[in-house]
Length: 349
Image 1: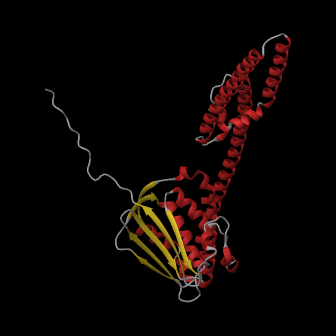
Image 2: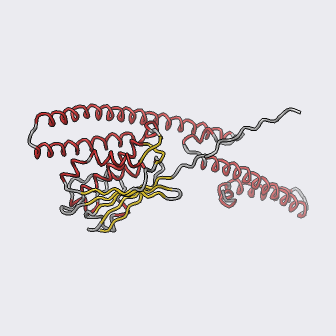
Image 3: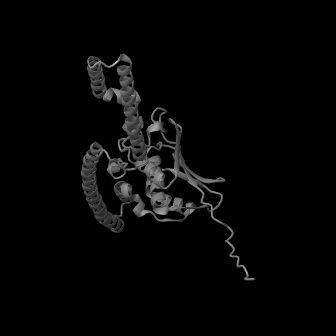
C-alpha cells in the first residue's frame, strides 16, 4: 500500500481537518490571540494530523503485507479467513466474517463437485470392468469357433483396438486419484518390454512390422510396473498406427547411464512435422498427421505424459517427418545405502 494512495483515500478527513484549522484560526484571531499563537496552534495541529495519518498508514500497510504473505503460501487461497492476522478494528472483524462465509460456501461447493466427480469415476471404472468380461469371452469364442485364420486375425485386431481404448478410458478416469493405485516395486525393464511386445504380437504381425530390442543386461528400476506397461503400450501402438506400409521397423533400446536409465522406442513411420512436435503431449491434439490417420484421438500421448509426471519420469520426443519418431523415457536411478549402519555400544566406566 503506497502512502500517497492511503492519503488520497483519507482526503475527506484531511480536508475536514484543514477546514477545522481555518475555523479555529479565525475564531482565535477574533478572540484577540496573537498571530504567533495561532500559527503555533496550527503547526501543532498539522503535526498531530500527519503523525496520526502516518501511524495509521504504517499499521494498515503492515497488516496487509502480512496478510498477502500468508495468502501467497496458501495452497488453497479460499481458506484465507483461517489465517488472517488478528485485528482490533471493527471494520476488519466485519470483513473477516464476510470472507469466512464466502470461504465456507466455496469449500462446500468444492466438496459437492468432488463428490460428483468421484461418483462419475467410480461409474466409469465399474463400466470398464464390466466391458472387459465380454471382450475376454469374445477372445475365447473366436479361438474355439473360427477356423479361418485371416478372419480370426482381423477380428482379434479389432478386439485388441477396443481393449486398448477401454484401458485408455480406465487410466484416464484414474488420473485424478492415481496415488491410490501406485505400487512402487522392483521392475525388470527387459521383462516389461517383452510382455508389451508379446501382447501386441498379432498387431505387429498383421502390419508386418519388425521389432528390434537392444539391451546389454537385465536393468532394474523402481516404479509402478502396471503404469509403465500402459505407457509403453501406448507408444508402441502409436508407432504401429503411423508405420509405413513397407519395411516398417520399431527399435527399442535401453541405455544405462550414471544417474538415469533411458528407454527409447523409435520407428521409421511418417514422423511428426516440426510445427506439431512441441504440442504432441497436449490433450486432444492430433496435428497434421492426425487428419491423415483417421484413428487418431490425441489422448494416448497425453496420458503417457501425465502418468510419467506422476511417476517422476521424464519423457522426450523427437521426430523428422517421413523419417523417424523416437520417444525416450528417462527413469531416475534410486540410490540406496550399500553398507548398513553400525550400532556402537559404549561401556560403562
